[in-house]
Length: 420
Image 1: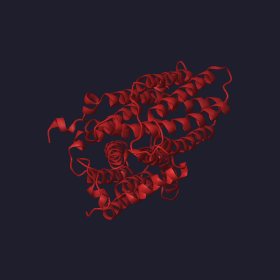
Image 2: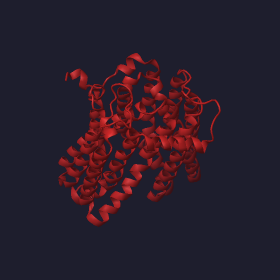
Image 3: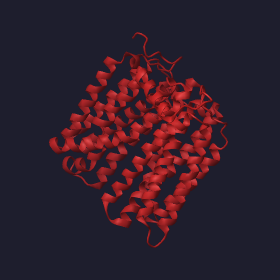
Image 4: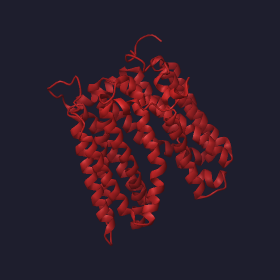
């Protein structure tokens, strides 16, 4: 394999004008949203001095986001997706501007932060489902993996750079500036995405069915399609049983004998691995056995997390987390592409919303599971046990779902019922 086939494929940026607009808008948005993700925690803590309140605001936002994602999935399959994307971003920009004003006054209101979290979470969920459903319409089918890899790379870049910049701004000009910059970022995204053509779902009947029936149709498709069902299930094993982030502070203190600086390094290491993995993801476009590559990537994640729990030394643990991050990015790129490749356009919104909802709620459940395991086994062995359960679950999925093993991005979507 030549070096050019390993480096990330930028063909969608060269040859798909609509995708260029989406990529540019998302790159700006993920960078500025990273500022708000840090600033909102700092802001709530400044108002209350309570970590419980910080967690509650995050919980409220997450719950609203989950509802918005599921609602957006239905709406994205019933109407013009571009309008949903632009409208949701405009509302979020207004909410961010209001947060900036609230943070600027001498006595900012905590109740307003909660209201903003509900509105922004719900509306952002609607727009997120619509955008993911629209992406297959902006690129050629054979470039879905490359398109997903580019978006993932942009997200990981934001995850690496954004928090550090947010910390500098929050400790200098203040959190209000973070909110204001994010609002501007959303407005820039609106200006770019407004140039997209109309993005109507294909194969939708003019007579709209009842929303509950529409949701049921999406669930029925997921249950009947072994590839799509397998993509969701294999991700659950990784998120619920091998998600160690909640244990990083305890690992730093009790296993590595370090403090907050080590916690920051533990959070940074997977992002570095993910960025490198995305940078060298060009092979996913040419590798014939996409399903098997996905299974191998999730297995590598589980094994790397297990090794992290066993590492005992900070430098070795960081190395395993870098590998885990690279495996996670590869898995995400393949899952996104296979999901979009094997879902009809008229169902993209509903199926995408299920995937995004799972990605939103799964880590929270995984964090709770990790905390419970650590209480009984200790942090290191709790992580090891979770990693091994993840590996066992992935092996079980691989053995019982031949359609997922056979999945292939090079050509027509695979039939979920054809023989292995």
